[in-house]
Length: 201
Image 1 (cartoon, rainbow, N blue to C red):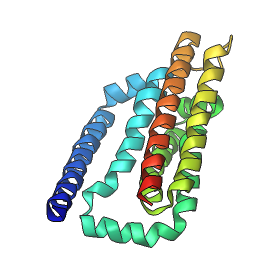
Image 2: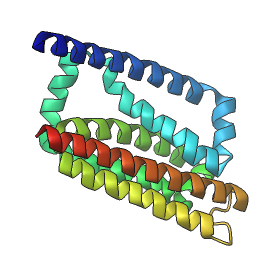
Image 3: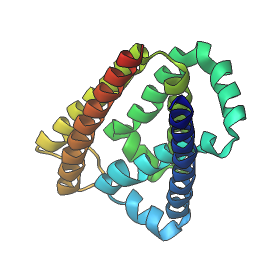
Image 4: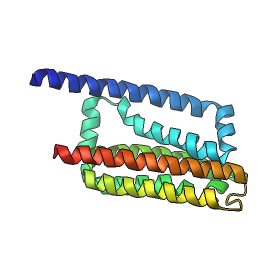
């Protein structure tokens, strides 16, 4: 019975790695098409709800391209830095919720490049931070990030004027509503994950 459970768990891990690899390829393919990327960059809603989450997902999925043993070694090597990795991930992802930062990325190519690099790195840092760090730390940072998304989304939704000079008010409101929804879903997912991890320990 134990052997069957171990085999099932192994197959699930392998299947999830292949699923992550396929997802990473699809996200990278979408981001690599200039027309699609420029279309998303021109819309605040598409940028915050599609483009940046795709880039974050790419960063999260990059380690899945390593062998299981090599990723495990990296997780062990970075275990002591779980707090720092999750701090960096939260900052690097949340800075692009600031209207000025998003505006500057539209008018300066270097800032736009830095945006993609930071969000990509945030995804990878979040993966190693979550895999190697303790669940209370992940719950703290993930919960705060989810709350930040809900708060920022509420500000975007309720603002009577444009907060970003490069995007329309209606676009801003759609982005705000989407951020609130994403934040709530993320908060619920993190709480369920933390409850499962706590039960295992």
